[in-house]
Length: 536
Image (tube, rainbow, N blue to C red):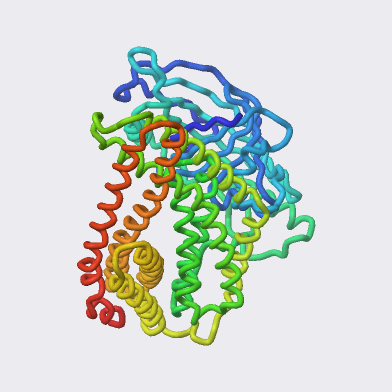
């Protein structure tokens, strides 16, 4: 069974003969306890092209220490040295619960051993006046060995400071201040594996050169006076600044792709708001395909859009259940005790738990399927070789406003249609249709913002306001349907349905208020100058 902990640590470069500094004078540290030297043997796994390392993710099998086993580290705030570490028991192969968390990066590629790190860790515990652990301080002497064909080794020493669970992060700042006074600087490497990759590159290049696999190139002088070949690695994540209209749209699509990939492990771990954010990324990408179809070939984007719609639907089961449960629960919490008749909370709890279990399993099943992997591969292929149309090379100031205004016109027609209808089911359907159009217009404005600046930002903000009113109205429609079903179930079980009817009436009143708000919100969003500003 995998366990998760939040890891907050900092690393510092030191010489090979470095000793542990005396940190007993750091504020809050009452004592430094010698824990001796621990021998660690870690084998890191990655794909052959090291997609995990490129995203600052490490996966290792480590023997030695108190937490030997498999460790997967996912970045939370790389600059601050914050990562989530998911641990699994020691086994010969990568545990399925860890391999699933990197599937959005790895896809169908094999995870293989790429680096072995042998570490002698001289460990100290920093404790407070009551003996409680504040942080672990160590000098790690590391030997790295590449396990790939090109080989390569490196050795170095570093100081590592890891904050204990529940300790004040400000302690790390105080320790760093003391280390700086001693001439010790923060490491530029995000992890030991990243440092090992850089350190072993030189010896690996020498081996390849000796075997005739590398042609001599430009050289530089090393620290000890030796000459070595410079190997330049192309970073595929670095993209040129957008120039054409299509450049801006593709940059927006790339951002959504990156969000999908990054949010995948969060959704699998059931982290708060992760399903919602992943669903939003799918909708934004699909909306970009539809709004900017004059720039990208629909024969390529439409099939991908269909798959994004499928994924959003699978995620929506989980998200919609979550939102609906929160909405109804909050309404129940406001009902006076004298009007809370029957086992209302118990029935609501049963409905909520059953629905959450079903939706959760469906979401995970979708992410485990091959269809999902093929979707990610299709998006990657589109970004690698964009299906550009003739208008793709148009200037952003011309093509993007035109697309945004077209989405606005669609929304305008749907709003006018909805407002012309009498309250009732037909109007509810029309307002839901307008909500979808408002969302699409908002996303079109967001995609155009880097090129069009503040006018696009203001446009998107107004569209979001319209979407919010329409969204709350639709949530009320869905909630009323659920409340009616719960009332029917309560009545069939011999319970009073009074409270469910009361909640139903409250939702009706809320929907009516949203319908009354819409004309005013739309008036502010439909001002001609808002659209005119898009073209400068």
